[in-house]
Length: 210
Image 1 (spheres, rainbow, N blue to C red):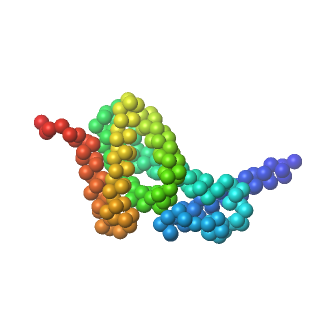
Image 2 (image 1 turned 180 degrees about the vertical axis):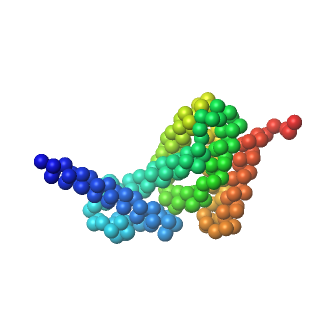
Image 3 (image 1 turned 90 degrees about the horizontal axis):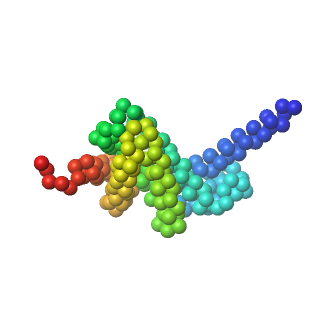
Protein backbone atom coordinates (compact mmCIF):
# COMPACT_ATOMS: atom_id res chain seq x y z
CA UNK A 1 0.00 0.00 0.00
CA UNK A 2 2.98 2.31 0.36
CA UNK A 3 4.30 1.69 -3.17
CA UNK A 4 2.05 4.23 -4.94
CA UNK A 5 2.83 7.22 -2.63
CA UNK A 6 6.55 6.48 -2.91
CA UNK A 7 6.32 6.31 -6.71
CA UNK A 8 4.38 9.62 -6.76
CA UNK A 9 7.01 11.25 -4.56
CA UNK A 10 9.76 10.09 -6.90
CA UNK A 11 7.90 11.40 -9.95
CA UNK A 12 7.37 14.75 -8.22
CA UNK A 13 11.03 14.87 -7.26
CA UNK A 14 12.11 14.06 -10.82
CA UNK A 15 9.73 16.70 -12.22
CA UNK A 16 11.08 19.35 -9.85
CA UNK A 17 14.66 18.37 -10.72
CA UNK A 18 13.96 18.65 -14.46
CA UNK A 19 12.33 22.06 -14.01
CA UNK A 20 15.32 23.40 -12.08
CA UNK A 21 17.71 21.89 -14.65
CA UNK A 22 15.88 23.74 -17.44
CA UNK A 23 16.05 27.08 -15.59
CA UNK A 24 19.70 26.53 -14.67
CA UNK A 25 20.47 25.72 -18.30
CA UNK A 26 18.70 28.89 -19.47
CA UNK A 27 20.72 30.99 -17.01
CA UNK A 28 23.93 29.31 -18.16
CA UNK A 29 23.17 29.94 -21.85
CA UNK A 30 22.29 33.59 -21.21
CA UNK A 31 25.57 34.10 -19.35
CA UNK A 32 27.59 32.30 -22.04
CA UNK A 33 26.01 34.12 -24.97
CA UNK A 34 25.43 37.46 -23.27
CA UNK A 35 21.89 37.36 -24.68
CA UNK A 36 18.72 35.31 -24.27
CA UNK A 37 19.08 33.80 -27.72
CA UNK A 38 19.09 30.04 -27.85
CA UNK A 39 16.99 27.24 -29.29
CA UNK A 40 14.92 24.63 -27.51
CA UNK A 41 17.44 22.04 -28.69
CA UNK A 42 20.32 24.01 -27.16
CA UNK A 43 18.37 24.38 -23.92
CA UNK A 44 17.51 20.70 -23.74
CA UNK A 45 21.09 19.71 -24.52
CA UNK A 46 22.46 22.00 -21.80
CA UNK A 47 19.91 20.67 -19.30
CA UNK A 48 20.65 17.08 -20.37
CA UNK A 49 16.99 16.28 -20.97
CA UNK A 50 14.81 15.39 -23.95
CA UNK A 51 13.45 18.26 -26.05
CA UNK A 52 9.83 17.35 -25.26
CA UNK A 53 10.59 17.58 -21.52
CA UNK A 54 11.04 21.35 -21.87
CA UNK A 55 7.43 21.67 -23.04
CA UNK A 56 6.21 19.42 -20.26
CA UNK A 57 7.19 22.24 -17.90
CA UNK A 58 6.98 25.46 -19.95
CA UNK A 59 4.72 26.67 -22.74
CA UNK A 60 7.49 28.43 -24.69
CA UNK A 61 11.07 29.67 -24.55
CA UNK A 62 9.79 33.05 -23.38
CA UNK A 63 8.01 31.27 -20.52
CA UNK A 64 11.36 29.74 -19.55
CA UNK A 65 13.09 33.12 -19.77
CA UNK A 66 10.49 35.01 -17.70
CA UNK A 67 10.42 32.24 -15.09
CA UNK A 68 14.21 32.60 -14.88
CA UNK A 69 13.71 36.33 -14.43
CA UNK A 70 11.29 35.79 -11.53
CA UNK A 71 13.51 33.19 -9.89
CA UNK A 72 16.59 35.39 -10.15
CA UNK A 73 14.80 38.41 -8.69
CA UNK A 74 13.46 36.32 -5.81
CA UNK A 75 16.96 35.04 -5.08
CA UNK A 76 18.32 38.61 -5.18
CA UNK A 77 15.68 39.74 -2.67
CA UNK A 78 16.48 36.80 -0.41
CA UNK A 79 20.17 37.70 -0.63
CA UNK A 80 19.38 41.34 0.11
CA UNK A 81 17.35 40.47 3.20
CA UNK A 82 20.07 38.12 4.42
CA UNK A 83 22.81 40.72 3.95
CA UNK A 84 20.70 43.52 5.42
CA UNK A 85 19.85 41.51 8.53
CA UNK A 86 17.17 44.07 9.35
CA UNK A 87 15.84 43.48 12.85
CA UNK A 88 13.25 45.21 15.05
CA UNK A 89 16.17 46.71 17.01
CA UNK A 90 16.06 49.74 14.70
CA UNK A 91 12.70 50.66 16.33
CA UNK A 92 11.57 52.34 13.12
CA UNK A 93 14.62 54.63 12.94
CA UNK A 94 14.69 56.14 9.45
CA UNK A 95 18.43 56.81 9.57
CA UNK A 96 19.35 53.33 10.74
CA UNK A 97 17.04 51.69 8.22
CA UNK A 98 18.58 53.71 5.39
CA UNK A 99 22.10 52.78 6.50
CA UNK A 100 21.14 49.08 6.71
CA UNK A 101 19.58 49.09 3.25
CA UNK A 102 22.43 51.08 1.68
CA UNK A 103 25.06 48.80 3.23
CA UNK A 104 23.25 45.71 1.96
CA UNK A 105 22.96 47.12 -1.57
CA UNK A 106 26.68 47.93 -1.63
CA UNK A 107 27.55 44.42 -0.43
CA UNK A 108 25.61 42.65 -3.19
CA UNK A 109 27.06 41.59 -6.54
CA UNK A 110 24.66 43.81 -8.49
CA UNK A 111 26.87 44.18 -11.61
CA UNK A 112 26.53 40.46 -12.33
CA UNK A 113 22.77 40.66 -11.78
CA UNK A 114 22.40 43.71 -14.04
CA UNK A 115 24.54 42.17 -16.79
CA UNK A 116 22.43 39.01 -16.62
CA UNK A 117 19.15 40.92 -16.88
CA UNK A 118 20.22 43.02 -19.84
CA UNK A 119 21.11 39.78 -21.63
CA UNK A 120 17.88 38.15 -20.54
CA UNK A 121 15.65 40.99 -21.77
CA UNK A 122 17.73 41.54 -24.94
CA UNK A 123 15.77 44.64 -25.99
CA UNK A 124 12.51 42.66 -26.23
CA UNK A 125 9.62 45.01 -25.36
CA UNK A 126 7.24 42.24 -24.25
CA UNK A 127 9.88 40.69 -21.99
CA UNK A 128 10.74 44.11 -20.58
CA UNK A 129 7.08 44.79 -19.73
CA UNK A 130 6.77 41.41 -18.05
CA UNK A 131 10.03 41.96 -16.17
CA UNK A 132 8.83 45.40 -15.03
CA UNK A 133 5.70 43.77 -13.62
CA UNK A 134 7.77 41.12 -11.81
CA UNK A 135 10.12 43.83 -10.54
CA UNK A 136 7.22 45.90 -9.15
CA UNK A 137 5.80 42.89 -7.30
CA UNK A 138 9.24 42.09 -5.92
CA UNK A 139 9.69 45.69 -4.76
CA UNK A 140 6.31 45.58 -3.00
CA UNK A 141 7.20 42.28 -1.31
CA UNK A 142 10.54 43.73 -0.21
CA UNK A 143 8.84 46.82 1.22
CA UNK A 144 6.40 44.74 3.27
CA UNK A 145 9.16 42.48 4.57
CA UNK A 146 11.48 45.37 5.50
CA UNK A 147 8.67 47.19 7.29
CA UNK A 148 7.75 44.04 9.19
CA UNK A 149 11.32 43.25 10.23
CA UNK A 150 12.37 46.80 11.10
CA UNK A 151 9.20 48.07 12.70
CA UNK A 152 9.39 51.18 10.51
CA UNK A 153 6.36 52.89 9.00
CA UNK A 154 5.46 51.04 5.77
CA UNK A 155 4.87 54.28 3.86
CA UNK A 156 8.37 55.52 4.67
CA UNK A 157 9.89 52.14 3.82
CA UNK A 158 8.04 52.20 0.47
CA UNK A 159 9.48 55.64 -0.31
CA UNK A 160 13.00 54.49 0.59
CA UNK A 161 12.83 51.21 -1.34
CA UNK A 162 11.22 52.68 -4.48
CA UNK A 163 13.68 55.60 -4.52
CA UNK A 164 16.71 53.35 -4.22
CA UNK A 165 15.40 50.72 -6.64
CA UNK A 166 14.59 53.30 -9.31
CA UNK A 167 17.96 54.91 -8.66
CA UNK A 168 19.68 51.56 -9.17
CA UNK A 169 17.84 51.32 -12.49
CA UNK A 170 19.43 54.63 -13.54
CA UNK A 171 22.83 53.45 -12.30
CA UNK A 172 22.40 50.25 -14.32
CA UNK A 173 21.61 52.15 -17.52
CA UNK A 174 24.65 54.44 -17.17
CA UNK A 175 26.86 51.51 -16.19
CA UNK A 176 25.81 49.39 -19.18
CA UNK A 177 26.45 52.26 -21.61
CA UNK A 178 29.89 53.01 -20.15
CA UNK A 179 31.05 49.46 -19.40
CA UNK A 180 29.20 47.36 -21.95
CA UNK A 181 28.21 45.03 -19.13
CA UNK A 182 31.70 43.62 -18.68
CA UNK A 183 32.58 42.32 -15.24
CA UNK A 184 36.25 43.25 -14.94
CA UNK A 185 37.84 45.31 -12.18
CA UNK A 186 37.44 48.63 -14.00
CA UNK A 187 33.73 48.10 -14.68
CA UNK A 188 33.10 47.07 -11.07
CA UNK A 189 34.95 50.18 -9.86
CA UNK A 190 32.69 52.24 -12.13
CA UNK A 191 29.61 50.54 -10.68
CA UNK A 192 30.76 51.23 -7.12
CA UNK A 193 31.39 54.88 -7.99
CA UNK A 194 27.94 55.36 -9.55
CA UNK A 195 26.24 53.50 -6.69
CA UNK A 196 28.07 55.64 -4.12
CA UNK A 197 26.84 58.78 -5.88
CA UNK A 198 23.26 57.47 -5.82
CA UNK A 199 23.38 56.68 -2.11
CA UNK A 200 24.93 60.05 -1.32
CA UNK A 201 22.26 61.92 -3.29
CA UNK A 202 19.40 59.99 -1.70
CA UNK A 203 20.88 60.36 1.80
CA UNK A 204 21.71 64.08 1.55
CA UNK A 205 18.92 65.23 -0.76
CA UNK A 206 19.09 68.52 -2.60
CA UNK A 207 18.74 70.97 0.24
CA UNK A 208 21.49 73.50 0.93
CA UNK A 209 23.90 72.38 3.66
CA UNK A 210 23.11 73.88 7.06
